[in-house]
Amino acid sequence: MNQGGEQAEARPARGSASALTVPGQRSAPPRAAVRGTVERTSVRRQVLDALRSALLSGELAPGEVYSAPALGERFGVSATPVREAMQQLAQEGAVEVVPNRGFRVAERSARERAELSEVRGLIEAPVVLRLARTLPADRWASLRPAAEATVAAAACGELALYVDADRAFHRALLSLAGNEQLVRIADDLRRRMVWAGCDLRADAAQHVALLDALEEQDLAGAEHLVRRHLG
Image 1 (cartoon, rainbow, N blue to C red):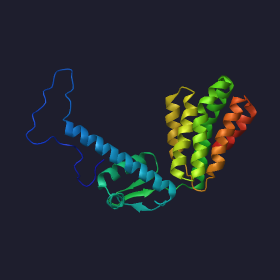
Image 2 (cartoon, rainbow, N blue to C red):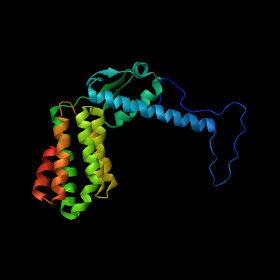
Image 3 (tube, helix red, strand yellow):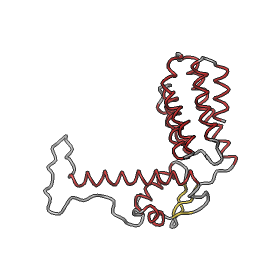
Image 4 (cartoon, helix red, strand yellow):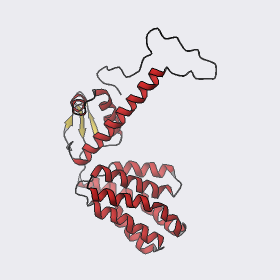
C-alpha cells in the first residue's frame, strides 16, 4: 500500500523497444526493471528486519505512534519501504495503522498474552505429543542443531537473533507433522508474542531438555516440558 503518491514501479528507459508478446508466453521484463525490483525487495526486507528488531528490543515503544517518513530518516531510506514493511507488521498484529499519522506499536495486555499462550498450547502441544508417541527415537536427532542454535543465541543475549533461532526450532519441530498450514498458523502466533522479560537461557534450555526426553521416549517428561514451555 503506497501512501503519499510515491512511485513504486520501475519503468523501462525511454526509447526502449516494446517487447513482443507471444500467445501463451509471458514476455520477460526489461533488465533494469528486474534489477530495480530485486533491489527494492531487498531494501524492504532489510527495513522489515530492522523494524522487527526495534520492536523486540523496545526501541519502538508499545503505544507510541511512528510516522513512515521519520522512520525512513532513521534507517536512511525513503518512506515507501517503511510503509510497506509497516503494513506487513500490521497484518501480523505488531502495529496498528493510525490514519494520517503513521503506525502505533501494539500493546499486549496481560490477558492478551495469556490468551496467546493458551492458543499456542492448544495448537502445538497435542501435535508434539502425538509425534512423541509415533515417531521413532532417531528422528529427533535432526532437530539437535536447531536447538543448539537457540542456546548459542541465548548466550549472546541478542533478542532478535534468539527470536529467529527459536522460530526456526519450532518450525522444524512442527514440520515433522507434515502439515504446512499448522506451521504457518503457529508461526503467526509466535510473531505476536511479547518477549520482554523472557529468560532466554531458560527458554533455550527447555528446547534441549525436550529433545532429550523425546529421544529417550520419556512421554511423561516430554508432556511436562511441552506444557511448561508453551505456557
